Structures are given as structure tokens and as C-alpha cells.
Figure 1 (cartoon, rainbow, N blue to C red):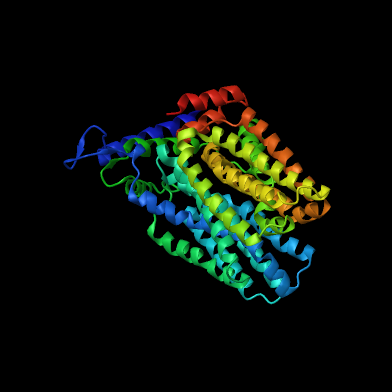
Figure 2: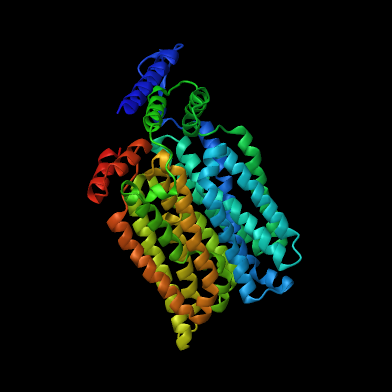
Length: 498
């Protein structure tokens, strides 16, 4: 009890120090200039920092989209068997799992910027190994290294963006990460249909270099600096992000007070996530990641070309159409996320992926029965486009946004590692098994995915809270004190929405 009182006293003293040293007040002038409210200020440096960060998301998208347009070229030149190409396609996710295990700890130890930089170095080395590969071993090594890099990026990019942006635009800015993943996949699809697989890998290095260079020109996450006790840097970075004339007193005091009041709580490890107080948050985050991957994403993304070819549709035309739809729907998702909220978009998105799986599965069912041959290619195209477009609308990015919002800072790194690891494990299962499932029954494969997507709709409807417009501190607070009473959690979050 004495330790808790001391922590709160220290917090209040820090808050007083902020107010007295800088004399920030939202109702007074500062040097003759009216101060603006920091909580709603979106400055050019926030935009620049976000654009630099999402270069990592573009790298992620390039890696995911690489195998589909490169499949035939790699198999022809290096003579890969079905099993060898399945390993090549899925080893990306094994690297992703390894990156996920350490992603939270790396981001906490060397900072969000440092973690992004290290990740891109791994990606560059991986792409170079693919470019110069002469056999399957170098090919797999390169793919594995890229996986390690994007495994960390998949966690640290949305976390960094959520920590630097004002709450009123946090959802839209964080969902830019998913937009760039979609753009990375789409452009890799397009480029892969025009040039050979080695050239595609070489081009994929460009966004990695842009990201690395951009990191030198953006600030570190203020929340991470505050957590490390680097208060002067924290204040300076927050002021830069909110603007020279912005009043950051309340936001800075809130962040410091929150962190200081949690200092008496030791940093929780992964095992602590299985305590009752975190059960609901873990169930939400892990459940969303499982449904995101088991709904068939990597089957559609990694093997788009094979799906179109088997259905008798031009793979190049199909890939270009898929690329355009993904970019358009991801952009629409970015525009709608802070207007419609997370839950409605997730519901619509998951329902759309379910429909896409049903249409694709039905088209292959008709093919097995050898009826409707003239409509099968068009039906497959519609099914694939409906699935990919619906996925990009919400299910692609929103689970990561929710994950970054529902865990307190004392468990955030461990939670991030666990959730990202689960995502990559599920991703590996789908990407490795898809070829074998497709060989077993093309129609049955997509009907299985449809059932899982249908279960995802029920899961979202029953368990997922709305976090739109909720301050990071409030969101985590309500999830922590819920004592696993779902109705209270959801009510608490809705009650705090603006």
C-alpha cells in the first residue's frame, strides 16, 4: 500500500513539474501564440512518421505476395517439386514465427525505430539470398530471413503508429499499415506478371532501403521513451509530434501518470497472460488472429495464380484484377474505420470472405461435376475478388489495431509476441497444407474455409468490443478491471467512446 501511494505521489509531482516548467495551458497564450489542443492535432511530422513506418508494411505485403506470381518461374528454373515449393511458400511463416517470438522484447529493448531498422536488414539479406540463389537451400534461406524480418514488422509497425497518433485519427492512421500491405501484395502481383522472379526479389529491396533511410528522420515513440524513464526526450518528441504551438500538458501528464502508476507492477511475462485478469483480452486477440488466418488468407494470397489456372482463367488478368480490388478495398477500409467503427467493418468483412469462399468452392464443385464449364472461370474470378476485397476491408488490418489497443503497457510486449506468434503459426498451417488440401478436393478446401469464416462472424458478434475513439489508457483500463465480465467490458468501452 505504501509503495502504491509513493507511486501515485511521484506521478502527481511529475505532473506538477510538467505544468510548472512549461506553463502549458489550453486556455492561455504561450509566447503570444494561442496553444492548440494536442489530443486532436495531426501534424506533418505525424503524417511523415506514419508514411515511413508503413514502408515496413509494404515490405510485408511484398513478401506475402511474392510466391504467387513467382511460382511457375521458380519451379521451371530450379526444378522444385510440389513438396519443395510448399516448403518455400510456408517457410516465410516459420521465419515470421521466430520474429514474432522476439518482436515485443526487441521493440521494448531497442525501441520501435530500432526494431523496424533491424527487421529491414533481415529482409534485405533475405531478398539478396533469393536473387542470387542457385538451389532450393539458398531460396529457402532467403525466404526464411525475410520471414524473420516481417514477423517483427507485423507487430512493431501498428504499435508505433498507434503510439504517435492522436486518438481521433488513430484508427485511420493505423489502418494505413494494412493499406500498404495490400499495395505491397498488389504491386508484387503486377510486377511478377511482367518480369522474372529474380527481378521481383531485387525490386522488393527498394522499400526496405526507403524505410531504413526514413527512420533517421522520424521521432521515437514518446510512450516508449516515457516507459524507459527518458522524460526529457519524451516531452521533446511529443511536442514535435503535436506541433510547436500545441498544448501537450494534459496528454503528457496522462501518459506519465499512467506509466508511473504501473511501475510498482513488475513487467509481466508471457505466462502472466494466462491469468484471469488478461483472459478476455487474450481471447479476443488470439481468436481474431486465428480466424484471420484459418479463413484461408494464405491459400488465396500464395496460390492465386494456381487457383485461376486450375479454373481455366488467365492468371495474369486475374492477378491484375486482384491487385486493383485489394488496393481499392483497403483504401475504403481506411476511410471507414473511424466512421463506422471496428466491429461493423469486421462483421461485413468476415461475411464477405465467407461468401467469397462459398462462390469459389461452388465453382470448383461445378467443375468436378463437369457442368457449367462456361461460367466456372468467371465464378472463380468473382469468388477470389470478393474474398480478397472483403478481407482487405476489415479483417486484414483491424485485428492488429484491436491488438494494439486492448493490452496494458506492462504486458504489451509479451502479448504482442504471443499474438503475433499465433498469427504466424496459423499462417504456416494454411500455407503449407493448402497445396495438399487443394489436391485432395479443390471444392472441399474452400468450403472448409467458408465454415471457418462463418464461425468467425459468430465470434466477432459475441465477443469483440468496439474500441473506436477510446483513449489507449481507458481502453486498457476497462479491459483490465472487467474481471472477465464481457458485458461490462463492452459497455465500458462504448461509454468512453467519443
